[in-house]
Amino acid sequence: GAGVSQSPSNKVTEKGKDVELRCDPISGHTALYWYRQSLGQGLEFLIYFQGNSAPDKSGLPSDRFSAERTGGSVSTLTIQRTQQEDSAVYLCASSFYTDTQYFGPGTRLTVL
Amino acid sequence: TQLLEQSPQFLSIQEGENLTVYCNSSSVFSSLQWYRQEPGEGPVLLVTVVTGGEVKKLKRLTFQFGDARKDSSLHITAAQPGDTGLYLCAGAGNTNAGKSTFGDGTTLTVKP
Image (cartoon, rainbow over all chains, first blue to last red; front, side, top):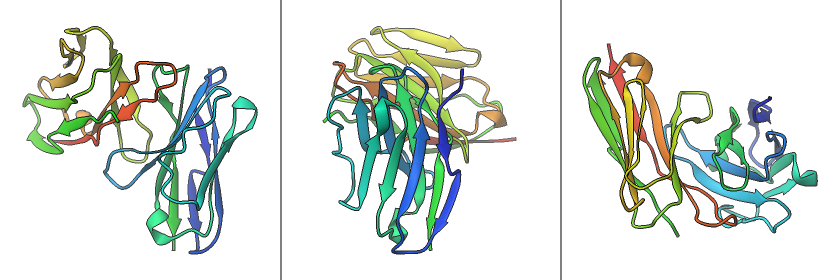
C-alpha cells in the first residue's frame, strides 16, 4: 500500500507569511506525529495525534504553530507569521497505536 | 519524560572498518527501533527489538536490546560507503497513550 505522503516537498516563503504543510498518513493508522529536523540533527517532536484522543501539543515551540487532523486521517500543520528560525525539514509519521512509525519524505521549509 | 542519548554524535571511518553506536536511557521501553535517514529523505525503519537481551541481524548490521530494555546498540561489520547516513534510535512508550521518543542520532560517514 501507499506510504506516508507530504506536500509540498519544498516551500519557500517570506518572513511573516503563514504556511500550511500537509500529511497523508498510511490508511488505517491511528497515530500521526509531526517532527521538525534541522540540518543533520535529530528529530524535534512537535505534536502527536492518537485516535480520537486530545492531541499531545507539548512539543509545539510557540502559539504560532498549530495542527489539526481531519476525520482521523489527513493532518495539516500551520505556522503563522513565519520566522527565519522556523526554517527546517518538517517530517510527518504515522503508526498503528504505538507500533513502528513510518515517515514521509518531509517538507523542506525555507523562510527568507 | 523518557530520554534517549545516542553516542557518538558523529563518526567518520574508512570502508571496511567495524563500528558500534549506542542508544542509552534511564527509562524502560516496551520496544526500541533503529532508523537510518539519508539526506533529503525521511527516516527508514531498520529493525524493532522487543525482548530484553534480544539480538537481531540484518546482513552486516547487528542490533542488541539491553537485558533491562533501557539501552541498545547497533554494530556494523565491514562498513561500506552505502552505510553513510544518520542513525536514529526511538523508544516506544509503555501504554497506548504513549508516544515514541527519539534520540538525537549518530551521523555516520564511511569513506571509500
